[in-house]
Structure formats: C-alpha cells, structure tokens
Length: 303
Length: 334
Image (tube, rainbow over all chains, first blue to last red; front, side, top):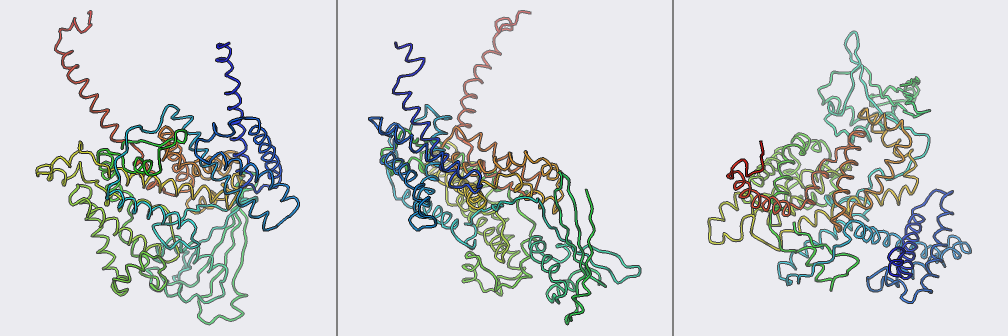
C-alpha cells in the first residue's frame, strides 16, 4: 500500500497538486486576460479564467482545509477566494452592464489582484523550482539599532521616490525616472521614417554637404526627433533659430538647404526605401510663393 | 554578501525580523568594496561620456530646465554661474578627481558622494531640456549609495591606514558589519523595479500585441536606419525570431525582480539579461552596458572569497606534503 502511495502519491497530495495547478492556471490566465488587447484571444481567455475560477471554487468547497496548503501567508487564502469570487461575478456583470462604474471597478480590482498574484506566484514558483530545500534563516536576527532605523529611512525614501516616479507624467525627478522603453505596440505595415539634412555649397561647382548633429553642435536626439521633422514638415517657414545655428557653425555658406525624409518599409521580407526631398526657405520673410517653391520629389528604391 | 532570503513557503516570524534579515545581515564589506572597485573605474574609463558632451545644453535656454535636482542646485548657485562652461567643467573635473580617490579608497565615502553628486548634476542638467535617456540613472544612484555605506572598509587606502590605528578590528576583509549589505540590496531592488517598469509598461501600453513580431520589427527598423547595425537588418527579416525576441524581452523584464529574492534563479536571470542587452546593442545600438555592469551587485563575493580561502588552506599544505613525498609514494609507477 505504501509503495503504491509512493508511486502515485497519497490522495491528499494528489488533490493538493490539482488545486495548486488549478490556482496557478487561473492566476496566469486571469493575468493574461488583464493585459489582453487581441480581440480574437480576449474572449477565450476570459472564458478560460471563468472556468478555472469555477473549478477552483468547487475544489475549495470539497477540501476541508481550503486554500491553506496553497498559500501560507495569513489571509492569503481569503484573498484568493475573493479573486475567484470577483472573477465569477465580474464576467456576468460585464455582460449585463457594459461601460459601467461598478463593472469598471470590479475589472480594475481584478486586474490589480491578478498582477499581485502573478508577482507573488513568480517568486513562490522560483523558490519551488530553484531553492526547494531553502528555508528562512533560523538564527535570531540582530536587534534593531539606531543605525538600522536611519538606514531604513534612507531605504524607504529611495524606494518611495522610485515608486512614485513610475506614476509621474513627466520624468522630472531624475535620477528617479520611469522606464517605459519602447512600450507602444505597432502593427503592419512595418515602416519607419528617417530624416537627413544636406546643404548645397556656394562654390562653383556646388557640392552637397551633409549637415549633421555634430556639425551643428546639437544633441543627436534633439536633431533627429525635433529639428529635422520640423524642418521637413514646414519647409516654407523661416526657421530663425536654425539659421542662426547654421551661421554660428563651422559649416561653409550654403546656397540651398535640402531636407530629406525616407520611408523605410518591409515588403515581402525586403527593405524598401521611398525618399522625398524638400528645399528649405531660409529667407526670414517667406511668401506664399515659397510654399509652392518647396520642391518635392519621390523616388523608390529596393535594398 | 551573505544572503538569507525569506521564503514565501515559510513565513518570517514578523515583518520587523524579516526586514532586518533582508537589509542588515552581519557580513564583511568585501562585496561592497569589490563593487566599488568594479563600478567606479569602469565608469571613469569606459562609460562616462567626454566632457564636451556635458556642454551641449549650454546652447539651450536655462529657463527650460525642468529637472528637480538642477532646480535645487539653482536655488543655491546663481544660474549665470551654473550655466557656464567653466562651472560645468569644474564639476566634471571635481567628480573625476573624486572618482580616482574612490577607486584607490582614499576618503572613500566622501569621494564617492562627491563623485555621485557631480555626475548626478552633470547628467541631470543634460536631461533638463526635454531629452531623457535611461542608461545612467541607476549607476549614479549606485555611487551615492556606495558612498553612504562602508565600501571603504577593505581593499582601500583608508583601510590600510586605519588598520595601523587603535580601531584596527573594524577594518579589513575579515571585519563584519550589519550595514554592509543594504546598499547592494537597494541597488538590486532598483534594478528589479526598473526592469519591471519596462516590462509592465509594454504589457499595459502595448498589451499582448507587443509580442506580435511587427512591434519588434518596427522598433529595430527605426534604429537600423539610424545606426545601420547589420544584425538589425537580419533580425527584421526573420519574423518569428522577432516574435520570440519580443516574448523573451517581456518575460525577462517583468520577472527580473525575482532574482532579488530567489538566489537560485539569479544566474539564469542575469544570463538572460546579458543576452537581452547584447541583443539590443547588436541590433539597435542601444548601449545598456551600465545595467550589465550593475549586475555585479548580485555576485556573492564574500562566498567566493571564503571558498577561495578554504581551498587555499586545504590544498596548499596538502599539496606541499604530497610533493615532499618520494615519487613512488605519490603513485607514480614508472
């Protein structure tokens, strides 16, 4: 009998494993549902999370110890039960009342709980996989001294500033900033626009010189993301500050300035270029004729 | 660094004990000192930009300054003085001299604080006019945190000098302290938060669409046309590789914080982080070397030192004894 139990596990352990698996599945699916914005997938995820919540609730009612073996943290089992219940109630509420304050708060609360559970679950699962025999230190911790309190204040202040910076609209608390690096999603067509600036010298014969950020003494970022798009999109406008920067630079005097914007596209796995050039009016008093004079040419090329 | 992580499966007796165990375990200052010896010279030699780059904002209107740290400096230093090449070059020179002193460990705490504050001001000024990059902020915070902790207790001129004084026991690699870990832990936490911010914002802004492959293709394409990295062109032409790369990026960034709490997963997370950053560098030319160098705060140098020491003590006399024995007794038969 014991050999049988060892081979297949006891009925209690099998039940606990089933509950654990069910809880993990529910949390992961609910979390994916919280961040889902793919219409064809969101419905399936929502249905799966509702189903898993129902199974988990049934498992809870069948088990005499409830969720206790799953979550040792005090009140954690009640929070998981609340998550289950909110998920079970939330879906019918969403179906009945769309765009409602109650439905919004239930969904918001559920999403927050799902994030919390995923973060907790990641740490717990990592412990289970990578440090299974590791337990908390049994030696008595050192007594709380004044230096600990002082350092704790610094720790809390630094963590608090960093956490608060994540919710600021403008990152003005450098070095405490948020990191939304490349966070927006893009869909097809895969394309981007790149700008370049050239000057035609007054020499005879004229030469084409690239006007770089370094030559203008500008930050690369400001040059590419602010100056060039502005020059290209409004070639007829008199760009006083640009004219001044050009005069102050070590670049030769120019007869004409040309802003170039190239669309780069991925078509059938190949990179395709569509350049467009506009001539800039650097005259301080441009008229309507200058707008029309802004030359536009378009050439297609395949790399 | 002596790690005593609390486990979710065996809750601590109380929050106070858990807090003390997490931030204040009694250990030596060896990890702290080695981190100082890695972070400071690496910054001075490889990561810091030339002084001329810090002068670029002098062409901008100081009325546009929006960073709180620079506004705080301007409350003390007049803007006519601050917004000059001489002042900024003075700050740069002071920060670099302090960096050299911090490396050799002379007036270590003061040097690190001066160096950290100097670069906080210079880079904060650079990012005060609308432009902001993310690579240096954690590194500069690390300098200040190392300056607030006993990072000069060993492997420093301060330690060498103090070990000749009356309080010699408090200095050197064997001296134990319960304030030698918190700074490294805090840098680990800040790295975890930074990665989590990057990963969670992708999921919250872009949702699951972020992993559609086209997002990574567009991002890499944008940087390819700017910097012309050949690996970038190769990547954008492999759609499924972009899908896998995007999924890996989101998972590593969102769950990197686990490495702070679970020691066993650290090597995998750090390896994944290095792969991620090297991939980003090779395809997009975005240099996040500062973050990779900061991984040094996760290395348990105290355990390595102990192991090396034990190995040295155990093997050297035995090896010497073995070598003293006759050749045949050592097991050689011919």
